[in-house]
Amino acid sequence: MAKVKHEAAWYPLESGETVLDGLLRQGVNVSHSCRAGACQSCLMRAVEGNVPAAAQVGLKDTLRARNYFLACACRLPDGEALEVAGVWELRMPARIVSLTPLSGDVLSVRLETEGALDYRAGQYVTLLRADGLARSYSLASLPRERTLELHVRLIPGGAMSGWLATEAKPGERVEVQGPAGDCFYVPGQPEAPLLLAGTGTGLAPLYGIVRDALEAGHTGPILLFHGAREPGGLYAVDALRELAARHPNLRYRPCVLS
Image (cartoon, helix red, strand yellow):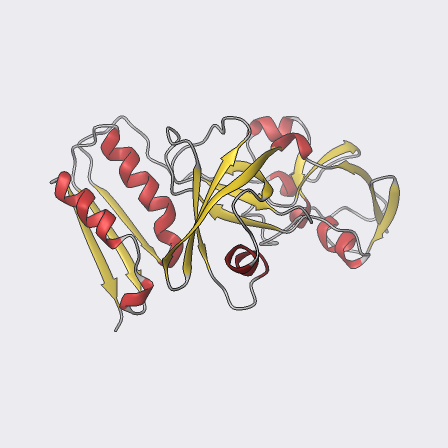
């Protein structure tokens, strides 16, 4: 049986159980969201012991070198022991600046961080509430802007989206972890065509990318598709139509199923 040490206590892990599942099973409050290694909300740092290579897949070289790993992907061989620490150094204090409905089920959340966040338009961050609840959202803002903008879909019964929609207020203190992700505009081929497509709040990273590309002087054709089940699911329509009117190489196509 493997075991993991977290905040001065040792916890046994069942055979094949991930560090995240083992800690949660035993009542330890660990930040997490997707449980699939994509959002990186469950990042931990190994203080002692060997980290399986599979637990570091997708992480930046700088994080791997400092023994960071994904708890949701970390399965220790029987008999192994791992001592872990949190990732407070990767988190940045922030406050909610505004909460603005973009449609019936999409909320724009603007955050102001205590320091400058080095990110590329289209990447994502993890938003953490004071109690450790964490969810990852793509950035719709540009690095030059004073605040970060997230597009949050309001999910019935959703813990984070429900809190943002009904309880959170401007001035509320939160934390941001990240950025992460490889979905962003890369300069160097200004004449290349760009095809951007997303549904629902999948527009968020594309909204940042298309503006980033245009500000970088991209001259090639850009085709942006945004899909929804019904017209009410579309948002930022006027802003995108205005953007397309100012840039002849941009074609914006809102699409609905019915």
